[in-house]
Image (cartoon, rainbow, N blue to C red):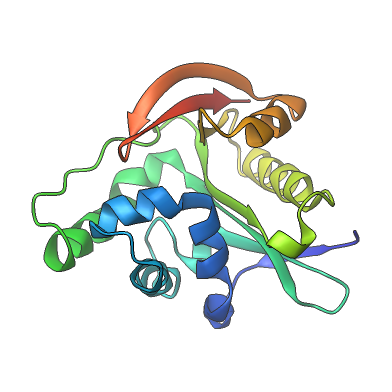
Length: 186
């Protein structure tokens, strides 16, 4: 499928948070302390529309099909900025959902971190995820990053195959948001 990739805008909030939720449903449910899809989308929409946080439109790129419809998205950022980008998210979670929430470390400062990757269900298997990953890896390199990292659920065999195909190597297993993930790097 031919796609165009562009920087996300606040106006993409009617679609992108739902796609993001595909990639991180269990994680967001952990954040909001309940399995509520509407509340999870509300949570992600809030942050997508705000600047300077992990899930902001500023850190997100979208894939558009020939009709200019969003068919996928990818979010990533400089690991050096992780703590400052994470702070508003942690504060919001504690104020609105779970005041005792701590949250594990997701990335390290020396890498560009790919936080979410999602492709709409109707267009999966058409190479969109690969194109988004290749785009963001190139973007990271252009910004001077030598290392790109991500986490993948140890049970997500298809994603693991895709990341390995693109040159990511499997690192240690880490516990994050009540799940187990491989830390992967390229």
